[in-house]
Image (tube, rainbow, N blue to C red; front, side):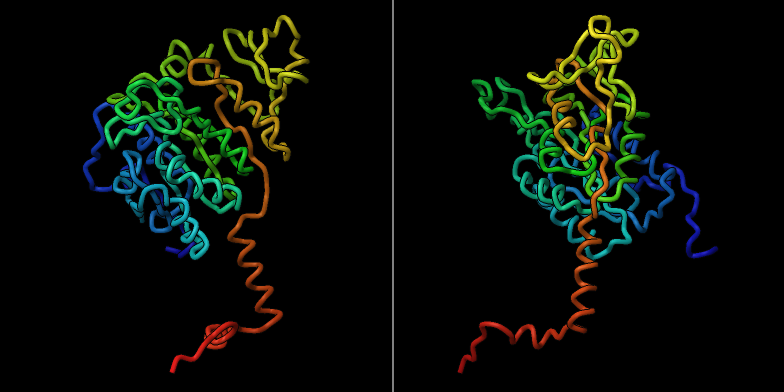
Length: 340
């Protein structure tokens, strides 16, 4: 077999021998199945693939993938994955993180990995709660959320993960949910194929501590009226018979309208490749929470040099100008002292 030949694999090849230990009915099972089914289709090797996670229920993910993996420390998965992606650009590096892990203690690491455009595929499981530590409110929990750590209701304005990513000018930002395997697989595929930092928010149900958080929009009977599919190059329409649509109002930004009232020509045509992130950001603000019609799909997919390539080019240019580096000379340069 040629070294360049990628062996044909199945889901079974990508599943480890570890017992999957999430609560019965957890949405993580659905996400794991989607990823394991997708991996054979990507045409990559297991030994060239790495899953890096932080702390939380989602962070068990590397144990269940028959690849290289690292269960790191709380919030630091993007930082560790950045080092790996820079040192080994030949690897396919995935980051798996929960909303608490990624947006609380890990918030700084996440936004800097995104703004630098490190070549990572980041899967952010959002269940709007801390699950592993037994039901405290998280950075995405709604105002008024009553939990063990907010017995009188949360006073915190929640993060919108898609808005955060677009605000950091991530080059690929998307949203999917755990009740639609086909959509998950296609969205994660798109994220993997993007060169640079990709973030996919996945609405994931925690059936123990926050059951039904997304039921109003992801429930099978509600999806047609409550999920707004974003399709590149097409007018943004949803609802029964496409009766609802999205327009850009000069004063109020993105707004939902009745198509019959404005006409199809007035609808916003989705352009995920738009360099200016402002329209994508407006789309991310259409819903105040998962109880209003909510956009789903790819918000942004733009081309920008990835961080690893830029670093390699900078090092190559420096070596060309100055020749090979001398570690001894570097250590003895600058402000050094001799201690008798």
